[in-house]
Image (cartoon, rainbow, N blue to C red; front, side):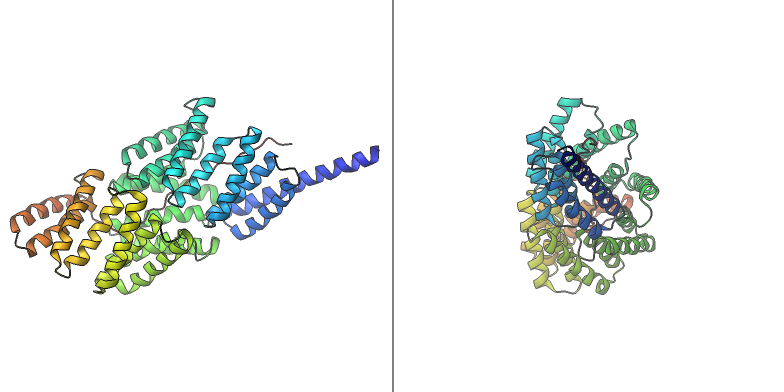
Length: 443
């Protein structure tokens, strides 16, 4: 009897040791960006964790971490299934439900399911504040993520407030604030606050390289963002060098069809377009669109952005039929997913108006320009470069339709804006999201 019990105990201990070792190895591989190898180890760990029983928190942890890996690889259906299983276990066992809610919301954001994401984020924040108070360090990633969601929805003041609150918590607790710095920099870039954005990008990049080394996928995110900033400022050689480095990192770590590869491709296409090298830009935008459609499906805001960017390039080739079709498709997606007063909607309206204006269809173009300008003034303010670009385009239409005085007023306003901030209507956004680790107590 004793011998049998001892052997059973040894088997259990061996099982726990195997699970711990597999999880540690999977985590190490994931941190190195070796996602395919990490997935194999997580799958082996999941097989071990299933033996602990259907309500064991180690099973929830394994599912959570495997789901995060799936999310990073763009395998969203698999990720959602794993996150839901982990959440159900943690609810039943009294585990860290806030972690599971946050991580599921991260996935929803990447799928463009913003209402679902906001509900989960706010529920997680409410639970965390109720249990640990408003200054709990664990709030920082959730606040960062809710800030990102607010940014995507065009609520810039709310986003900045949430990012700054998260930064204060991270710095007070001694945690690494690189992700939140990156996101705040993206927000500043969208507001044309370029010097503030560059300063934060450089700080975040230095932190990431020190912690992860120069070839990790997290480095590529900031390189892409910094390159986009330099492209806006017309520092093209600096931007291209960073983008080539980012693409090499992405393709080596997550493969050539990952959504993050599309971000770098799109940003490189923007750079070539601004250099008037449209022939080089066009295949990059087509590839970026194909990657996003495959990863996200046809009805995602990122797909709308790629459709609009590709439409803009096609205008340079005077391929107006395809340009109109793509811009109209982009507009329908953006209005459905983001509402009728989002900055991306304005960008697409401006593009579609240009398609019509270049074909002298001024009656179809003008109401689109009017609507784009109204959205930008409301959401971005009267001193934003995107507004200047729309005003300039609208002014050209006014001149062609013999309204020179009104056109001159618009051009003056646009020039005053552009004196301070150069335009960039095709910017790509690479935002960090923070998944959370349940971290069960050691056995």
